[in-house]
Image 1 (tube, rainbow, N blue to C red):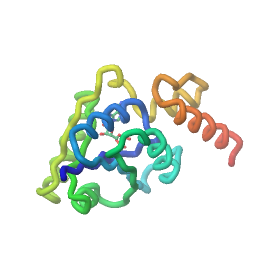
Image 2: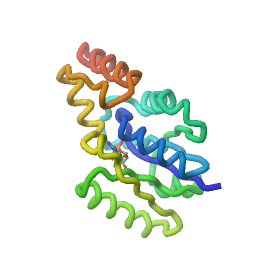
Image 3: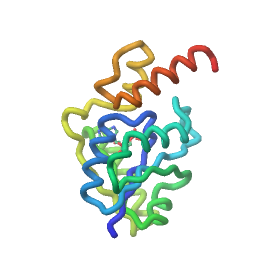
Amino acid sequence: MACAIYPGSFDPVTRGHLDIIRRAAKMFDELTVAVLNNSEKTPLFSVDERVNMLREVCEEIPNVKVDSFSGLTVDYAQQQGAVIIRGLRAITDFEYELQMAQTNRKILPSVDTVFLTTSLEYAYLSSSIVREVAAYGGDIQEFVPAYVAQKVYAKLETKKHGQ
Ligand code: ADP
């Protein structure tokens, strides 16, 4: 069985991520979207909240499951017997992603990285742009599924009231 993992922060999942998920799911028997539990970042959503949002928006794609992990992505990929999927939006992504993929191959040569280029309509999109636009009261419906937009606004409202 050909398995892949699609690791990332997904804080929150965007339509750009979903595009990669749908396309990767067609290429592999099983795709695991894996939320990285990275203690160095201060996320808007907890890992559990991100996992739950991903499960909700990926529900209709049968061969996709959602998980979280800590530690090295290559170790997690090897445990799953999977290749790593990453999305490339621009040349600026490429420099970092190439370095990451080469480092990962150095650590564990058996784990490959597969790059999918972003659909042009989502090339500008990032989770940080979504968080920023929403924080200033902008409309994010075009960037994320309606379910996610609602969660983002609710979370920002909770944060505003210091909860
Ligand atoms: P990370 O913090 O690991 O970069 P992200 O959640 O920002 O996590 O991104 C996860 C993966 O999705 C990365 O490979 C990234 O390049 C890709 N990605 C991010 N935004 C988009 C987008 N708009 N279209 C396609 N791929 C994207």
